[in-house]
Image 1 (cartoon, rainbow, N blue to C red):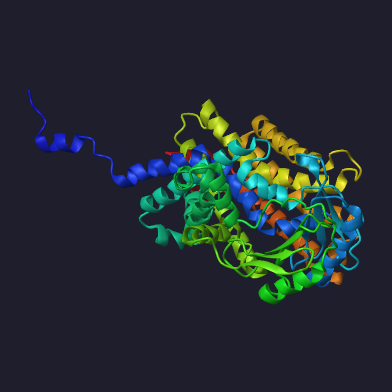
Image 2: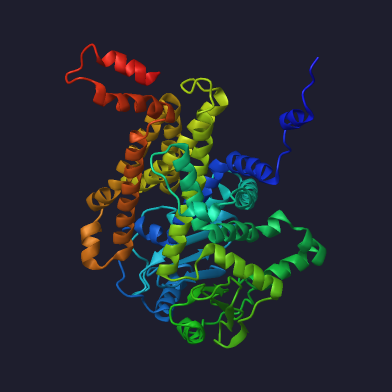
Length: 559
């Protein structure tokens, strides 16, 4: 009997898996398992960089302010109005106008009431201090911001835990992706259109490298924002009792519970003068919040918090005044310590509120590229595995489910978010729980896209939902013009760049969806392209008008 040689035996032995192959598997599965949550987090987090502008667009009743009103004058007028409107309240909180919020608002605690019902809020005209005309009830852009890290319908701790878990998976996917792609920077300059799996991989690589530092930063700092919840053991070791922990948190925030009233009435000193001191210290338009505790009492206090514009830190900075005299009691312009300031800087980098309009647009665009990076990774998983299926037209259930979830998560989420904006314009203004039904409309529409994806063939579902997203986004500016007096043309004439800018952004996103729909409709799987290639090569040999000679030529080309 002839035995195989040692060389042939060695060649046939399986090769050990290298670190790049192991990292590739880790990258694929860490990106897939929570990829749908990551896509939703990235997209809603991206639009949250303009949450204040979205909130303005969703309250068209509030008038456009061509110039930012003076915060000191507006605060003084609102405080005077609250003496009647919120008489007996133990605490007022006034949000004066700033560059991104030219309107003013206030909230106050109802005496003798506990829970969420204890607070009442209203919008005010900063020029007169009087309560503004009732704006429609809406959560505005704050909903997308909150959904970004707690997923709305999930209970508060569990939604945040899921967001943290998804961020950890994202961090693993980023690190393993860098290790896997040894030609990652070369691939950034390579993109091949119409090549199926190769095109999706090129797009995924380019988008990954384009914003790699940003993606790593935004993922890590996202974990830092809730690190006390994810890893509370350090705080528990440093501060033994709940009272010590509460005192430490108070040092890192500007919130302080109101002191006990003395029971002796006293007039509130001019709040406008106190705000002017803060403006002289921080800048005219950088007053974040004014909190008045025990107004009308001798033990009243006024706490003015600095805004976040122009400083890459969220550390609490405030001025504390004696309410009855206006005397400055405390000025806190420094952080509580090195560790606290480091955390504040990382949180500020994640939120991006320190930047001007240009910086926030850069955040938006790079974060949008990150959203596309997650989306192309999810699609690449199905594109790569479809070619290996025994029958691509009849995939197994796991593949079918992932493909449908991809369609609903990527194409469907855009339609759902647009559905919320449509509901904002179409729901009756006096509808009970109107803000809640705007949100319900988003999830109803989003759920309908999942049902559609499950009932239609995959490619048709992609094309149809992408076109539906393009239509829903493109028609929103028209709906806005028909239902309000602040349509695109009117906003451009008035210089109202909040409304005009959002309408133009919606049109740009609609065009992007339309391009993706056209590209998806024209795409042909690799098997179809290979089958069509011999027919194209055989075409010149066919006599004019076809005929019996065409069949042998095509058969020969096929062989």
